[in-house]
Each structure stands twice: as structure tokens, then as C-alpha cells.
Amino acid sequence: MTNKATYRRWVYLVLGGAISVPYLLFSAVAVPSLLPFVTTLERATLVGGALTLLVLAATAFLPAVHVLESTAIRELLDDPVPDAPAQPHTRRGRLHAATMFVLHVVAGFVVSFFSLLAPVAIGVSVSAVFTGHLIQTGEGDEVRVPTGWASAWLPVVFVLATVLLVYAVWAVGGLLRRAAAGLLGMSAADRIARLERRTEQLAERNRLARELHDSVGHALSVVTVQAGAARRTLRTDPDFTERALGAIEESARTALDDLDHVLGLLREEAAGRTPRPTLTELPGPAGDDAAGGHRGDRRNRWRPGRGARGGVPRGVPDPAGMPDQRGAARR
Image (cartoon, rainbow, N blue to C red; front, side, top):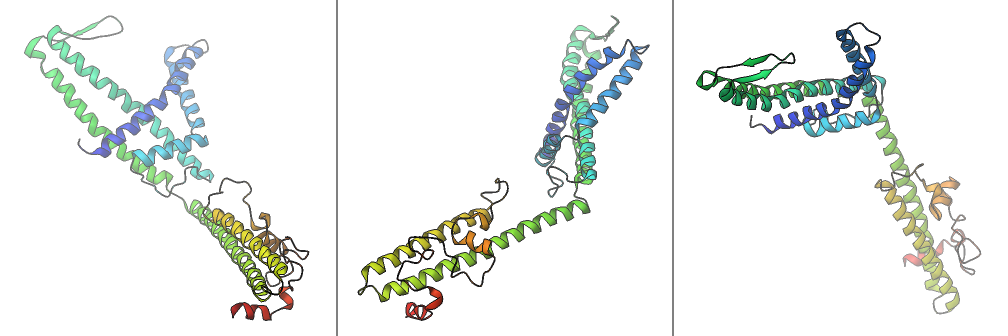
């Protein structure tokens, strides 16, 4: 009785009893509505109960119900299936999730009924010891017991029944936990589908990382070449040097923007975007390079800037025609 898992299971079952209330209201409406079409109240109750179970089974296939049930199992039944998806992706998985929901509601209704009945029964039994009145039936008949010590055993019996109810809750919760492990555990098809989705995500991340590497490498090449040219003309042509430094600033800023944007994608900070942005949609060299599709020749596809040659100021030789500038920059 001191096990915390028992009381978490009790909460889980009481939750199922609470969920059963709308279905009980439906049954209370359905049974009287069937009386004109059937001959007896027993038949109307039977048909109304069958309709209620049918409605319960139908609503068990709703996606929101699957999310609710999986959350309740994870939090209150100690997560017997940690790898189970909140929403099954196969027909078999949805059927199993619906079956688990129906079991939860039915078992929760029964346990909740006795949980509400137990304290009332204890109170009535204690009162019967002094009054002799135990219960009154619907036909007006009254069940009487002797007063005093002759009926003092009644409260003891109902207290023991309440204790047994606690153990029953533990047992029913354990059975439902096993049922959840058997019904909601990922099937082979679910595992394959999950691995395929994970593989696609990793492939997308690798592609973004590879193209980001190419984009930043291209921007650094531009910065290196233009910095070397600016160093050589620093004293002889200040205007030329200023334009070269402006192009370096623009290339570096573009590379930083691309880096920040793509790293955000890799951290799944932009997971809610539909469709997911790719490098072809990014501004600057990343989008130009990805759209061009040729990683080996990027020197003539720089982002347009202040100069006339796509980010290279006038007077700065194209990197393709000045390999010695790379050596000069390294010196």
C-alpha cells in the first residue's frame, strides 16, 4: 500500500472512469430512446450498452485519443513502452492503440465505481451500528441490522474491502501495464518506418552540413584573395584597397548569415517550417552554389556586391587569374 506506483495506477484508472462519463450519458439517452422499439427494459439496456461500446470503439481511433492515451501510459504507468510513437503509423498500430483505450475506459469505470462506493459503504456501515438501518432498496424494502456490538463487524468488513480494493487497483494497473507493453510496443513495420524517417533526417542534415562547408569555404577563399590584394595595394591605391575591404566585409557578413541560418536548421530550431528551407533558398553564396550544382567551380558565381563582377571591386583581379595572391596572402 505504500508503493507510489499503485497510486499512479489508481489515478490512471480514475482517469479512465472520468473519460467513461460521456459514454454513460450517451447510454442514458440511448436506452430510453430504444424503449418504443423494443418490448422490455432489459432488451433496451442491452442494445443501448452495445451502441455505447460501439461509439467507444469508434472514438478510440481518433488521433487525439491516441495522444491522450500514450501520454497517460507514459506518465502514470511508468512508461512500459518508451519507444512507442504517440500516433501509430500503421493500421495494426492504430487498432492496438484503440484496443488499449477501450480497456482503459472499461477498467477505469469499474475501479472508479468501487472507489466511489467504498467510502460511502464505510460511512453507512458505521451509521448502521447505531441506527440499525443499513440500506433501503428501490422497492421500499429496508435491510436492517442489529444495533450495538452485534453489528460492529460491518465497518471492519468494509474497511478490509477497501484495503483489498487498493490491492485490486495494483493488480488491474499491472495487467493494463502489461497490455500496454504488448499492444503499444513498436512492431517491425513501425521500427522500419521510424528508422527510415531517422535516416532521411540524418541525410538531410549531412547534406546541409556539406553544402555549408562548401559555402563557407568559398567565402573564405574570396576573403583570402581580396585581403591579399588589399595588402599589396594598401599604400599605392587607397581607393582600390577600400573597395577590396568592402567586398571582404560583405563576403564575411554573408558567410556569417549563412552559417547562422543553416546551424539553426541543423539544431531543428526551424522544424516548424513547411516546407523545410534548403541551401538553394538561402541568400548569398550558399543559395547560388547549391543552385549551380558545381562545387568545383564557384569563382565566377559570387554574390553581387558593390563591384561590377559579383562582389569583386573594380580593379581587383579575379581570383581565377591571380593564383599568386593566395601565396602573397599566406606570406
